[in-house]
Image (tube, rainbow, N blue to C red; front, side, top):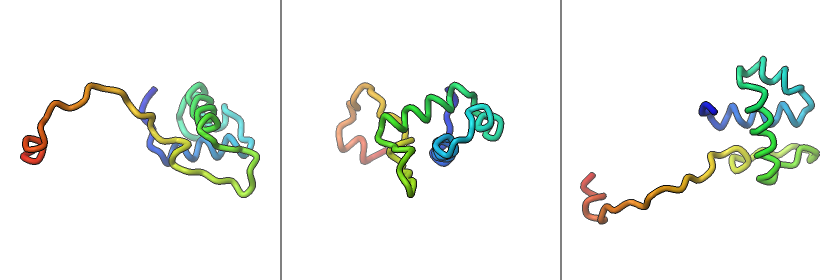
Amino acid sequence: MPKHDIAMRSMIVTMKACGISTAAISEITGVSARTVNALYNRAIERGFDPTQRPMTMTDAYVADATRSGRPTKQIPEAKAAV
């Protein structure tokens, strides 16, 4: 899935919550229908309530997931030098 900025993701989730079809959102934004649905479902899993009025959108609903990875091996002195 190509990387979309947080503003684009928020716009997609908001449009979908307002009842705009997935196909229309895909055409407007250029994002695939599959990605539109994935973003919307992920936002709901993270606490977004599409029935709430006034609608509330926070970065947490559409932010990048934390990535696991190997912890850094740099010692604080080396990190400060960089």
